[in-house]
Length: 74
Image (tube, rainbow, N blue to C red):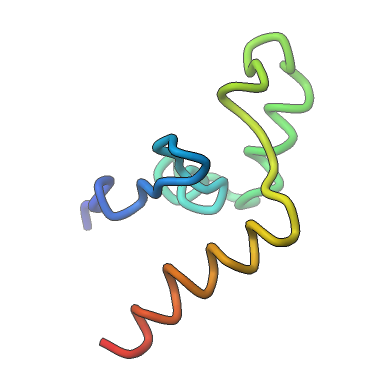
């Protein structure tokens, strides 16, 4: 089964981004986001802040409401 990568790209802070959970699916990580986040932590010089950052609590809440509540209604 192929994943639709375009459905995994969101716009946050005016930039196109992918969630760690989607990256874990894409790369078939056995330990899910833990594996992705550990790779970033262990290789921080390869993941500058502009490529890897965390949402604020408010951004996270707004993001979930905006992107996933709409999908539930469809």
